[in-house]
Image (cartoon, rainbow, N blue to C red; front, side):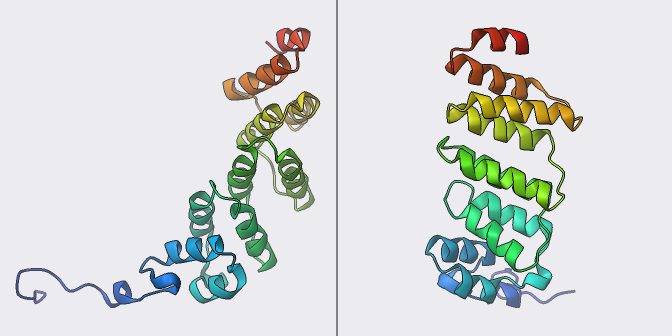
Length: 181
């Protein structure tokens, strides 16, 4: 039986006492803070060991940064360090850059990059891409992404059709919206 301290509370494990960069006890939050303060290369290497970085940890970091402009920087850093980026990682970043609707070029670049690195896009990739193009008022790119989606045998869902029809509607292309419906 484990000994307890007075008051009945267990001692914290030694790794809980570790203080990482930025004075944080949580290594993930330390990385997020370091990236947010434009010190990606100097602090991330201290907190994250690339050899021990796994897909789930990278996904968690990308999601924590998805509302900031630093999400893309972390993806680039991980790729430069030799980490294998998968579809889920790209989906997080494409959704993040597409939220504003002004960064459609970056979203398209990431989509093309997926094809270059032979990462297979899925329905969520296309939904994020079509939604990004729709917000930017680029109905032609929305249509192109939808056509590529069908070409690669990815089944569209309600979200896909909603984004596509909204894209056509904003561009006053009612005939295309009816055709998609």
